[in-house]
Image 1 (cartoon, rainbow, N blue to C red):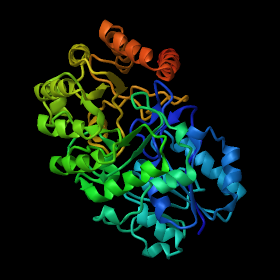
Image 2 (spheres, one colour; image 1 turned 180 degrees about the vertical axis):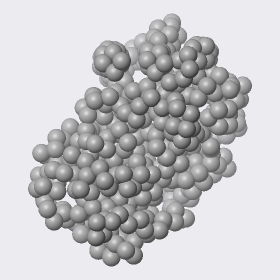
Image 3 (cartoon, rainbow, N blue to C red; image 1 turned 90 degrees about the vertical axis):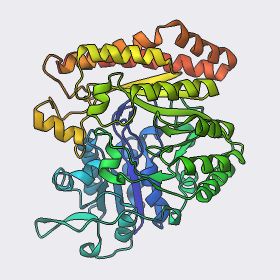
Length: 475
């Protein structure tokens, strides 16, 4: 069947699509590549990928684009499910014979609830869905396809799970789909050079973090990797297809989980002369960091989460404060830039631990950071723990405008206090001489960067104002 892979229209600026780890409206306009849809789109013949949010496509435009397709696959998420069901309903009304399937972490964990959310949804492809969708597109009988849930005679049928893909090298490159279907200039992340391009070199993560969505719902807690040669060949292809790209980002949950393999990949990338960045835990040794830096690494995206040791233990982070300090010191010495991420409202949070985390972040003095609110996604240990203990105040992870809500609260610490602390965190961190001087220095070095930083600064303060209004309305 002619197949449309769709990341549907959503809230303005909402980056909740197939690849985003932060399914909410961001502080500045940012979009990740829809790699989880691009991969099956590379497998399924006669397919097309449409990523509506970064292209600013409205529902009517998407409906017209869908006229040539017999099968539509929609990537959904917990925050966007209701909105995605509206799009599915519009598609069903206009094209009654079209088959519509939903994929994504929410659909994987709650397939029956997802099917019941809209009569327009014909099936759900659970967990790792690449070859599942190829089976559907080839017209195989649904009762023979592992990994799907569907309706039959008024009942919902859950077929057996499909095994995770063992050999990722067998999968075609996603960069060819990017070239065919996406406008790469529409993708931007504040801490990456523009234009950038991101993809995966492996799936899954061996870490046990209780809040992390993808390993617990789709990819698994074992790091399955492509061979260094396969990564090299795709990056060589990407360099040919996109000579304008200034930075490549490897969006594996933890690219540095297998250090010997990480070093081998880095050495191959070094021969291409590209600038690249990746996700990392704060426990990589100095020797490996040096190899990465010597072979083109510019930036590491690192989840520090909290400045309190007990909270790190509660969420099974597996990296101590002291280990993270040592790692950060080594990165500073080597000239590796760090964009750090922190989360407020994790289990054990108090007013004092929030202050500890702010002080810790200022001590680390990272180039840039992002502060999020603890998001209890269905299918995660965090969600189960919060539900069992009565700490989950709301299931609405984002507001009506796509801004992240504080959904957890604890005795002596309300959701509103957790939410309000986000703005205080940002101001305490960035309104210091060092970060301000770093930002000014980058602006003086490049006029285009200066324009970008001024735009992002304006967006950031508008975001804080919207957050304040949203929190007040929620209260």
